[in-house]
Image 1 (cartoon, rainbow, N blue to C red):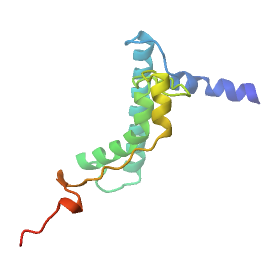
Image 2: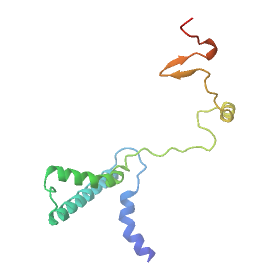
Image 3: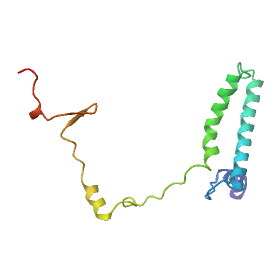
Image 4: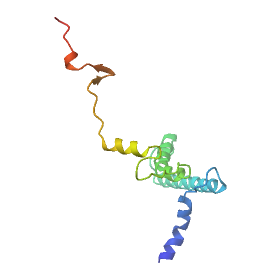
Length: 135
């Protein structure tokens, strides 16, 4: 049963696998064309079913646009996974640009809030320096 499932899912795995090679290769173009064909097939099948059910406004441009957008949203990830940026490898201790000692000192301290209060980019002076205009 497992090998039957694997053989049935093999085309889907090939379609959703990400090619790590940079640039636009023939394999990436082929996958993109297959994905676009699959998207067009699904949209056309949905239009045919909705037209057979005599849903109003499906034959108008707005009806087709709405149905196309509703179908496009789930397909977006499938269509663009080849062109997404690769995930960065994150180390467990600090970033690559940090110095060891400086990173440790800053990691343990909490930043103190500024004594001056900012309102709409205007710094307000401490209470001791504030005075009333009437004297």
